[in-house]
Length: 189
Image (cartoon, rainbow, N blue to C red; front, top):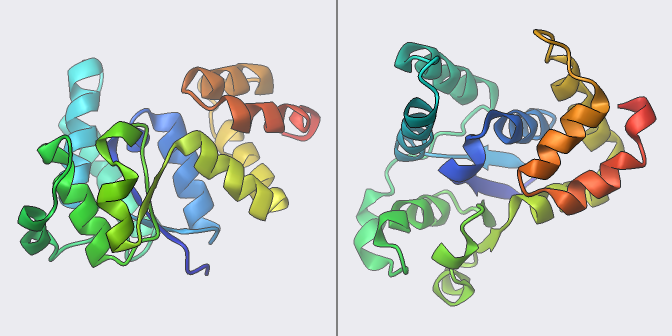
């Protein structure tokens, strides 16, 4: 398994297509995914706010599956670091504390402005947009990423999702560079 470790912020764990893809890449050994119970609570709260058709029980099952499938993904014991961290949004300090405690290389997040490099570099952590992170993964191990994308798409069976619709969905989730690269492989995905 790779030594590269990334804390996944709540905003990349919801919506589900990104969560699914990141977990597929982590279980394939491309990187080590980490998160906390607090991060779980944030993404679950977002889903419950936006999706009346889903229940907490269903999302708790997803939480358990995530914690089990990604192996040693749950970070704890980092709360003592929170008061030492200064960020534009103080509510995000727990994410950086988890990254420091887990000795993560990166935080994968859409909210780059909430994690300025000057606040992270002293901890040897960087914030990476999911489009860049996924594109880097593709650069590092193209065959494994293509297999992961194919698995994610083909698991969608009710209803089945054609590749173009799947790529359009990923693109709508602010992943234009990654999707642009994937389009050249659409016939095998």
